[in-house]
Amino acid sequence: MMMAVAPILGGVVLFLLIFLIVRLPGGMLQQKFVKLGNLQGKTYDEIVMACGLPKAQSSQVSEDGATIQVRQWIATGYHIVLLFDQNNICMGVSHQASV
Image (cartoon, rainbow, N blue to C red):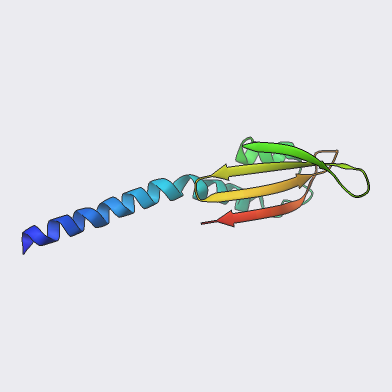
């Protein structure tokens, strides 16, 4: 009986350990964004100070000809895309996913 329980218990512990390792980076990043509250109106520098540098960035031109900066923060299990105007003020969240 004890022999059958050990592999099961080991499997459960291993699963939980892997689950935490995979989810921890994204969960920590998400909590940093949650602490900031409403991101709209915050400066790029404020967000970087709280959450670190983005992993990817690009730009696009809006219908009125203004350049919009698209910046993405990515960690295992969490992804957020923010849009910034020409003055580096956050216009809001374009996309957010947590798995």
